[in-house]
Length: 405
Image 1 (cartoon, one colour):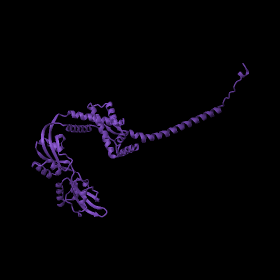
Image 2 (tube, helix red, strand yellow):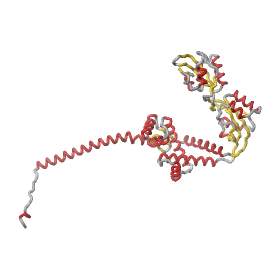
Image 3 (spheres, rainbow, N blue to C red):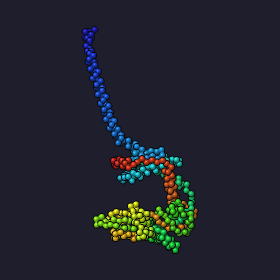
Image 4 (cartoon, one colour):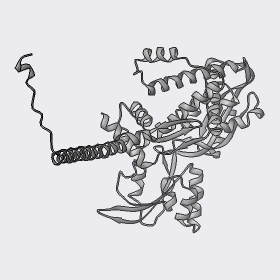
């Protein structure tokens, strides 16, 4: 073996002091690294927690419950966005969407309980047909609509071939006095359509209703259906009837060139009632108290007080033509106004025929829809529905929808 091969390397052995120093340095380094990692982790956790609180957690909050089904804020925001694509969402539409979510779920649950199933293939086909996004929201909307259609088919199928019906003509009029007058003229042979054009207080209400069962007639007429006979002409009061006519009683107490007039007003459903109330005023009755009792205008809770108004404020030319010419503290005569709506009137009814009669398609459709509405109401009344949305949460949801657009 050569001398080069025998040559050995020199080994340096650290002293105890050096080892101790190196160990301390390593320990300090580890502590610094760990502290930095903990600090960085804390910052990331804080940032992440803030992001979670502001951008994730609110979307996961349950805002609506329908029996065992829950809907979180994320779902609500998505539905609000989907239902207001062509408009700016506001509190009204937000509340509408709340009701819609509840109804959609009630329909799905109720249909399922009745054994009515909606397949995924049906939903996918309808979404494709309507060219809708294939998202959870639109799947639920389509599922509910398909369930509704099948429920309507079911209620239509259950209808009998014939029902007790009457072929009737009806006309809404403003008061009992007018109703008696119209009935007298009809009994004397006057044409119903001609009288309708003259006396009806709701021109859009078609006179000849065709053959109808009691279930599809105005409720007050349906209530007396059993007593009606073929050829009969009569009338019945309906406090819920909506009429395109009202009568003003106006009193002005102050006037000012800049402010206009300080006025009080009552809106009555008929000239007959307006005359009756004016007679009470002339006998010493208090305008405000009578307004609270009889008026159908929104000012009734204020005793009819309109405060200071100028021409155009009431959006009624008929009102302005009289109010701004009244003497102070003088009560106007009843003023007919066909630009307003009031409730309480009379139906004039003419029974052309009555008896068992087949159901036409329009009647079937109307009966099925009514049955569906009653079924849905029963579903709602027998369900547990919780709405946790308040004004603040709704405003937040609206903001999130607007930020997406």
